[in-house]
Picture 1 (spheres, rainbow, N blue to C red):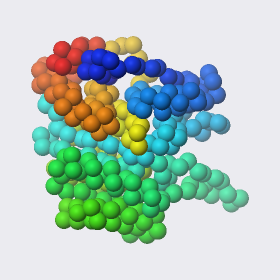
Picture 2 (picture 1 turned 90 degrees about the horizontal axis):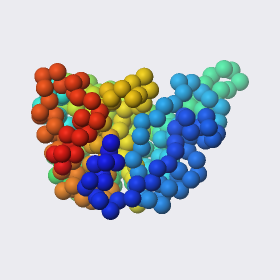
Picture 3 (picture 1 turned 120 degrees about the vertical axis):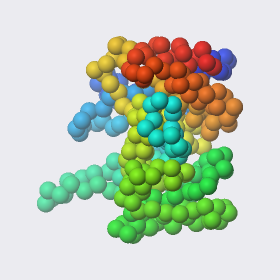
Picture 4 (picture 1 turned 135 degrees about the vertical axis):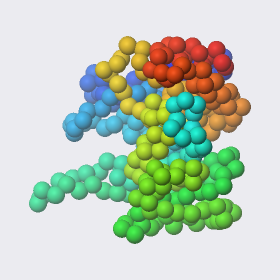
Length: 313
């Protein structure tokens, strides 16, 4: 669906399909075959579909999207949340969560010690925090932001949380953004996202906190079916709808394609630097949502939504 939007906007685009995910692991013993990683790096951009993962630990399995983020150097995750006609419960929300994408607890290093205690390592480096801040600065410039909020838990985790906060803050202040920078403890940020999401513009935070806060904030854009994201590195990017897979409705026409389509807009805006095309996609989505009947998205099939968006393009 999202690929069709790209092909309409960029008629010379070549689309290369590649395998990843749990089904791929069961067939080939790898959630991300080497050829898939090579294809992404050769193309320089990709669109990640919703894939399933096992609920528990499976020997040899590693999440496909985490593997791609780390091996392809996709060190930032961009997750915007904005109000949309008819599907959003609040009219004036327009924020973006800029999430560190390569470190934190998501490095996936866990062990069980001799006493039966399960231990997970949390990695935070100045280099990764600074390159995140540089991307956040670029996004803030494009958005002409009024505020950049650093979210952390340095009061409880002074080494990891403190290093993250200080590294990000130093980059932003040294870049001339000092007057725009504030900070929140993650629990306070969660409350503020529920009580007053309009207060936020750009949120810069760590891997785990960014994952949770962006899902929480997606309530204001109409839920996870409306929530896009972009995994972004240097010279390579992977658009990814935030929602997971829904095998129970596969083939029924009930899946909402808008998160994937809006993820394409992020690819256009930030990676390919084609903001005018990104705006065309977003305007088309807005127009289709404005035309929905009173019963909302539930009355439109996946194909009908896709066709309507393509027509507005």
